[in-house]
Image 1 (cartoon, rainbow, N blue to C red):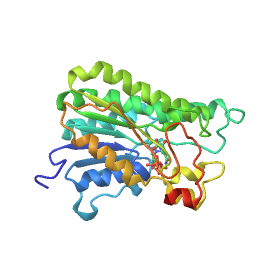
Image 2 (image 1 turned 180 degrees about the vertical axis):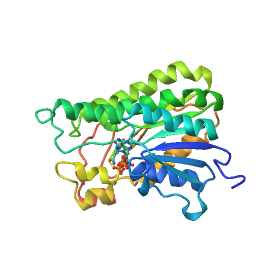
Image 3 (image 1 turned 30 degrees about the vertical axis):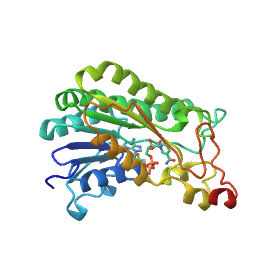
Length: 254
Ligand SMILES: NC(=O)c1ccc[n+]([C@@H]2O[C@H](COP(=O)([O-])OP(=O)(O)OC[C@H]3O[C@@H](n4cnc5c(N)ncnc54)[C@H](OP(=O)(O)O)[C@@H]3O)[C@@H](O)[C@H]2O)c1
């Protein structure tokens, strides 16, 4: 796809079997990137549809040796221009009084340590490409809400991981951006103790919206560095407004 926005670029998207990661892998491939897409459910990654150049990898991001192997395989064969970490999870028993040490460890190892493993393994390839890392964090990493202390700590940790990495690596031409989405209509919402009703899901962001933000970042000139990008659904969230209750219809229409 000569002349397309990401032609000649290689992207590794982790968490690409569903939701935001899947939408991002597809969008990047649609605009010409060579995409390596990874998740535990390899069979759910959409390879090749519509002439896309997508290679699927089975990967558990909490398995540090497996992350190292996969990143090295991709980096050695195709280089890495863009690394997107969209792998993440939450579970229903999220309140502090319900959290177990095992639950805490699982959350941190997938949502936070996994991002570190991927970044660390990709660093030599990112340095040689002047690459970009996009971490899908959350507004839950910025303000208290009902997503639970383990999830919020993991998401806040991602933001600071990106800050510190960018502080060190911008001089090597490597940029690290955290995207902080508000509520996005994806399957992760089914793990809430009370999954949101249809009217909230209908008013939420779509995974394709966040994918567009990833594409915006990936198509900026290398001189332009965006450390953080917050995106929230207009009708139900605002900075500091954590409730996603839908307002009366009249308020939405005005
Ligand atoms: N939806 C929202 O409202 C929202 C808001 C803010 C931030 N986020 C964040 O956005 C990211 C993407 O979530 P989503 O909303 O797109 O949810 P999703 O549709 O449930 O997708 C989650 C993705 O993460 C992958 N994943 C989970 N555990 C993994 C593991 N151990 N190793 C590798 N991949 C793993 C899943 O793949 P497999 O299960 O196949 O491994 C799947 O591809 C998450 O970090 C989430 O916290 C979501």
